[in-house]
Image 1 (cartoon, helix red, strand yellow):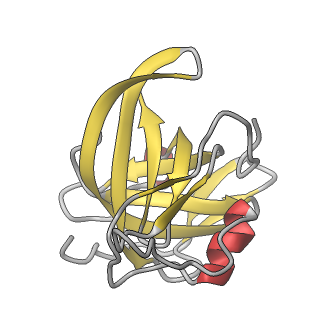
Image 2 (image 1 turned 180 degrees about the vertical axis):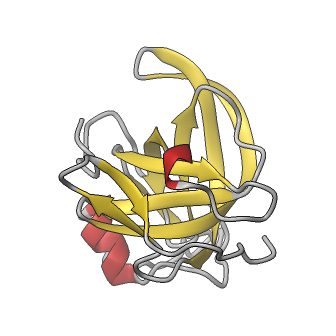
Length: 164
């Protein structure tokens, strides 16, 4: 599976209540091909989740500082809503971090905070399903995809993370 390339094996569902850092409906549509309206479920008030079976990058914050580019690791996303994203890892996510969204080279980076983790068996492997809420989007250019090197690089240095 390529970076930002969708794959099979996900189901749309409902979850996550709205937050202040919501993705606009057009961005959800761009990322998933679904959810152009971005509406909430009329009964529960929760935002719809859309399948997002792609590989993205995640790195935990390091003592309230932005992670170094070398700290990013691939995670397999599961679903996406306007308010957050869930993904599968080998260990539970317990610290806030930065996740990429999109297709290389057009990646966006967002601060996320973990809401919950649970053990799952998905895609033929045991792991942890981590549900995270978007906190805020990083400034464009903080991290970029360096195609020739095949990795993320950090453009700006000495920038502290917000109080997450």
